[in-house]
Length: 147
Image (cartoon, rainbow, N blue to C red; front, side, top):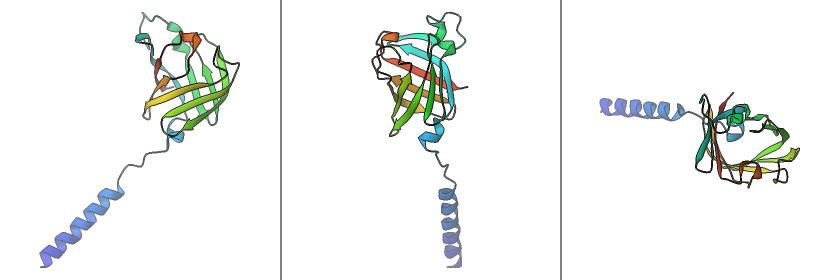
């Protein structure tokens, strides 16, 4: 009987240790608040930029920079080198909205909306859901890394 009771106590203790050691995931607002640069960019079905590649169709993405480090302020440096500033917000865990961008990126009304595909401590994958004439109104996918 003492063995069963001792085993039960050890089992309860082990279970409580395992439960309390769960890794806590920071909220998206904290995980996204960084400076991000392009690693891979797809415009439509074409990869137009891959960091370190000497044969990029759009080498200007080397200067692409999405600065979300000072919430709610955002700074976006685009493929053409133009920099836009405004604010950003998160809609749930799946949407990033840049708004009030100044100057307004061509044809956007000052707002760019992205779908968040995935995020880790060092990588953020976004898909542009706003029609964007600057990139040919294609569905663009940005794989970004921390700067």
